[in-house]
Image (tube, rainbow, N blue to C red):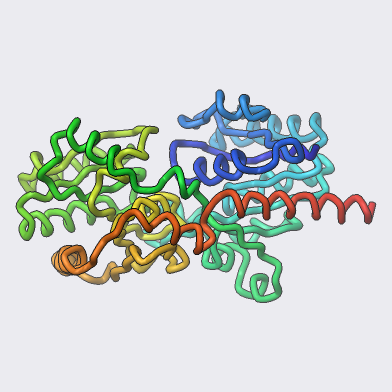
Length: 373
C-alpha cells in the first residue's frame, strides 16, 4: 500500500474538501491511503469519515504561527517516511514542498486548485509566492488548465509538465431527485417560489455583494423570486445590510453554514455564481448535475461547462443586464433535469473514473521513482 500525505491546509466545508474527499472515497484504498495534515483553524475536517476510510488526521498550527507550523509539519513527514506528498494549498505549497524535500520525500506534487484577482488583498501574497511555489515540487497538478497555467506558467503547461485532474463529484448521488425537491420545498414553504440558489463562502472572491445586486434586479421582474444563500464568511453582515437597504429581507433566506446541501440543489430552480475567480468550482459541477441552469461569471473557466446547463455572463455587465439574461434564459430553456447527471458522466466529471486515473498516476510515479533509486 502507498500511504500519501495530503497537505490540506485550512480545511473548511467547501470545494477543496469536496475535491479531496471525493477522490479518497473512490480510490482503491487497499492500494492507496491518504493521511491528512490540516491547520488547526480548520472548521470542516471530516474526522470520522477519514478514519473510517483508513486515513489519519494530523493537526498542525496555522500559518500565522509559521515556525511552529513548519516544525510540526516537518516532524510528521519525517516520522512517517511518506513516498508521496500531495499539497492542495496553491502557492502556499512552497512550504510543504520544501519540508517534504528536507524530509526525503521522493514524489512531491504541488496542485493548483484556484487562481487570484488583483483586487483581492490575499492575491498579493499569492503573486509574491507564485514564482517560488514550484521550486521544491517535482510534479505539477491542477484541476483545470487555467489554474495550471496561472500557477505554473504557460511554458510548463505547453511542455506537458502540468497534469490535469478535474474537479469531480459523485454524479449519481448528486442527480436531480424529485421527491427530495418536493419534500424540501414543502419544509421551507417554497412550493410557489422561483428559488435562486447560492452555495459558497461569503468572501470577496465569491462576489456575494454583487449577487445581492443581481437578485434585487431579478425580483423586480419575478415577483415570486427568492434567493437562498448557504455559506459563511467575513462579508455576512455586509451582505445582510445590503439586503436590508434594498428592503428585500423577506425574499432572501440565509441558511448559514451547512453540510447537508444535496437536498438544496434539487429544490433550487437556478444557481448563481458571479465569482471574481475560481479554479473549477465543485458547486458549479454539482449544480449542473442536479439539472440547474447555472450562471457563472466569465471570470470562471469555461472548462467548468459539464452540461447544457452552464451559462456565462461578463462581470462588466451591470446587475440589471445579468437579471434580464438570467430570467430570459430560464424562460426559454426547456429543462429536463433528469438527464443532467448523464451529461456530467459523459463530460468526465464523475469521481469513479477520475479516481482510478489518479490511483494509476500515483502508482506509476512510485514505480518510476523506485526503479531509479
